[in-house]
Length: 115
Length: 111
Image (cartoon, rainbow over the protein chains, first blue to last red):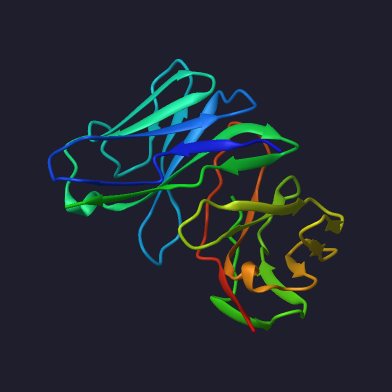
């Protein structure tokens, strides 16, 4: 089946620094990818939709200048958390929208801890 | 997207069948029922999906009622590794659509 690779699995950074998370579709092309955020003991919340070759679409309440999304190729989307603060600490998950037999596949997630 | 309702938690004995219910009374005719699960600190894993007919694969079976207002995910022989949060989602199919996750059911398989 289709595989979505997400890197890194976890990252610890100092407050004020920026962190980049990569999401790759390994064996298929994804014109659309989705970025989710999940706080402890809560469900996944959609942050933004990443579109190859165009600007991302952000959900209400998500700061586009803080969470920069780039989808420069059909197999790679990146999420950059700029000037990270402790409240940005969360589990970030990507998914790829090129459906195989109507299924959506997810990356393994990135645990971000901002000190 | 149709809203789904699931019990917050369930327990199941190892080796027994786990039956996870889901209500989706407002589901529309062209919306599928998807099941995903999330093991702690991992991304969601696809389990199964269906539109009208019951479905079975190597992981589970999906039973959808005739009126499509509810469904049941069946793990025939639960193991400790099946302990996870199980999400039932009613949504259209298509590459341009994201999935909206509810609160899910925490299934705990007991030894």
